[in-house]
Amino acid sequence: MNKPLRNDKDLAELIGLETPQAQRALSWAVYNLMVFDKKQKDYGPKNISGNPCPELAVAIRSNDKVQRLMNLLYNNKQASNESIFDSWSDLANYGLIGMLLNTGEWDSPEEATTLPELGIEYQEIH
Image (cartoon, rainbow, N blue to C red; front, side, top):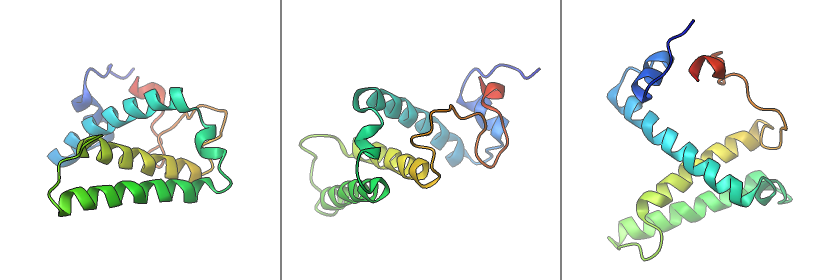
């Protein structure tokens, strides 16, 4: 039986993350998934899949975030609404939504059972 995971370091070790950057990124990825889950409860899946071309719509939303970031960073401006950090988080989550759309998993009624490409079952992580 696998040992229970107590923190992100345990998960990083389990999936073989070796660099400090990847290990720190894992913590932020978990944070982004928590944000993703919270927002999905408010929006529901149809805010994406209800669009006639959902993958393109996510690409456009991603571009909006990129343009916002470029404007703020290039012009050294302070954000007046959502923070630059929040824009980066949204952009990361749009990437995940795009990946789910691209693989046909966005509207799948089934829960995922394995980590893509790694063959690690989620139950091994929990």
